[in-house]
Length: 299
Image 1 (cartoon, rainbow, N blue to C red):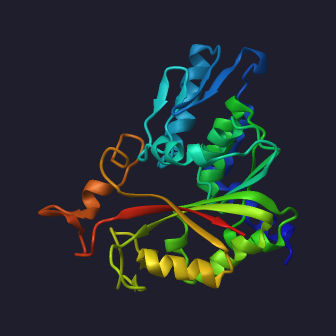
Image 2: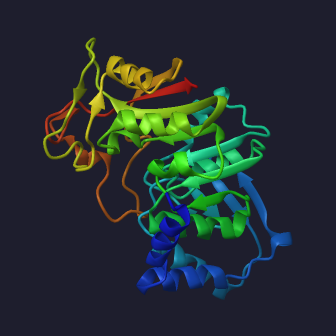
């Protein structure tokens, strides 16, 4: 597989229309590296000197990059209150992370929030994979201030087995239910690990003692590209078929408005619109409401 050709094709999406204008505006920002104080805590923030004109331009770019899903971020007094309070997920995983001197991938990295958090844990290499032009631009915008050293590849999970490096740790958070062949995806992750490597995986699941998966007819929580929502038993079977030797459950929890909600930084709907208004235990389609499971898989 010619990854460079795929990179080039995806990068072409950034060379026309609004994407090109935004990318040029990001590249034109003049931020003094020595004057920028960064903190990759729950709120990924950067503090720096900026003129009134620069502050206006930063706000203009941030608004042009809506919707902001993962975060939050703060650039001086500009607070990007993202749809997801992603620190809740990262902090749940944090006690299990040992990334020092590791080669780390974030598959489906969105705007890079988890990479920015992981950068504080001293990995040797940090690479994000996501084919979305919007998420790439959001990453470039935040990275302009943070200078984390993380790399963003305009590639998907299917490209991992052909990538130039293998990884010690892979994050794959909120991706597997978007794949029509989840076992194939897990095999791609397994192939991309160094010996003894690990995958941190999270997915929506449904409760039940059997080994089965919900297959939504048209959508799940108004999301059309959700193909399977497994029971824990079915998820474990998928992982075993992909030849992972360990399946360790780290946490199971419901998704609620403390973690996902509509803010001014998204223009569309959020969790409150995805659930049955008369029964919060059901989606708008009548399926069981979203629950999440977090697992660690070892090669």
